Length: 514
Figure 1 (tube, rainbow, N blue to C red):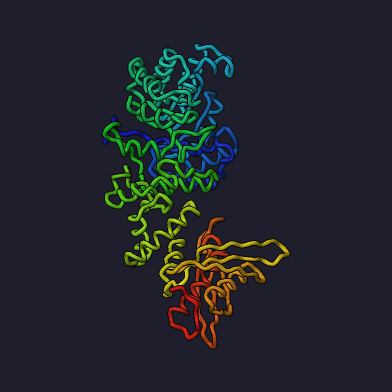
Figure 2 (cartoon, helix red, strand yellow):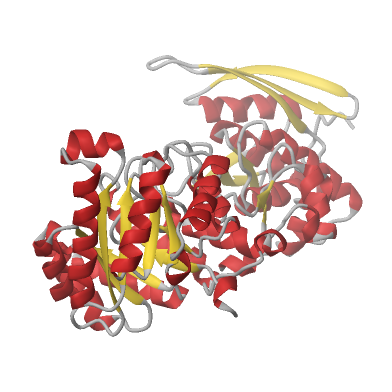
C-alpha cells in the first residue's frame, strides 16, 4: 500500500476518550485497552497526557514498555516541562511520539492565553524544536484550528513543519465546523503551505454537532492522511470521531476515498465491548457499526430481503467487524418468512397449519412485548402444538379481586359451536378460574401440583405454568400454558389438561361443545 493510499489511524481513547465524564480508567485497565488496540492494529496510540497526573505518567510509561508495534504517543503543552515529562514517560517505547499543542484561534489567544499572534508563532516553533531534540517523531496541533484565521493557521503550519514536526494535526476542537467548510480548510492548507508535503496532515474532530466522522472523512477526501479517533466515539463533551465509523466508512466506500486503513476490522466489536466494560459508558443500541441494532432487522420486508440476499439491506458484512451474524429481531413488524426461518433454527418442523397458528399467536404476543425472544417462541410453540386437541379454547378472563376479599371471575370458553360463560369464586384468582372452567366443561379436576417459571427476562417476560391435575380414580394429566400474564397462563395450563382428558376419550362425562 503506497503512503498516499494509507490513512493512519491514531487512537486517542486512552487520552481524549478518557476525558469523557466518569470514564477514568486505572493503569491496569489502560494497559488492557492498549493491548487490544495492538490487536486491532491501529497505527498509533495516544496513551495519555503524562504531566496531567502521576497516574497518567505511569500509564504512559507502562504502555511504552509493554506494547510494541504501534507508535506510542504522549500529549504535551508547548512548555519545556511538559515535553520533558512526556519524553520520560515515553522513554521505553520502541516507537515514540511527542504530541505538542498550542491554541491558535483568536478567542483562545485573547481569553485563555492572553498572547498575540507573533508570541504564539514563536512559542509553537520553539516547542517543536525543543521536542525534536528529544524525540525524532513530533506532532504539532494548533488547538481550535477550525476557528483560527486561515492565513495565520497556514503560517503556523509552515513554521512548525520547518521546525521539525513530522505530523501536523488540524483539530476541530469544539466541533464547530461543517464538512464542506472543514474539507475546504484542509484543501486551503495544501494549496498555501509550500512545505506541507514534508509532513502528514492529520485531523482531530469533536462531535458537538454530530459531524466528527463526516468532517474527518471530508478531510481525507481533501488530502488528510491521519485521523485521530476513539473507540465508540467517546471523549470530551459529545465525544470524538468514532474509530469504527471512520474505518468502516473508508473500507465500505473505497470507491470514493481511494485509500484504506491497516485496521484489523474483525477486532472492532471486541474492542468496543472492552472499552464499554472498563469505562462504564454504554453504547446506544442504534450506534453505527457497534450498536446492538447495527446488524439487526425487524421490518418484515427487510428480513425477507436479507434472507434472500444479505446485500439487499446490509452494506457491510457483520463478520467484517467481529459480529457472528445478522440478527432477525422478531417483533410486530416481522413477517412470516423470518418467523418460519427462526422456528426452523430452533429445531421445530411445523406443518403449515401449526406454523400459521403459531404465527398468529406470535403476532398477538408482539402487541404485548417489544421484542420476542427465542424462549418466547419455544413457549408459544409448545403451548400451541400440545398433544391435546382443543375442545375448548380460552376466550376471555374477567377478574374482580382486591386484598381481603374473595376473588370473583368470569371465564368465557369457545369451541366450534359457540361460547359459554360461567362465573365463580375461590380461595384465589387461579382457584376461581379453575372452578369456572369445571362448570363449563362439566369435568371435575383436582389440582395436584402447580409450578411457575419465567422463560424470558424483563418486566414483560413470558411465564410458563405447569400443572398436574387428577381426574377420577388414578387419572393424572399434566397441562401447560404460557403468557406474559401469569393468571392467563394458569388458565391455559388447566384447560390444556382438560383438553387432554377429552382427547383420550375419558369415561368421565363431558359437556363439550363439539
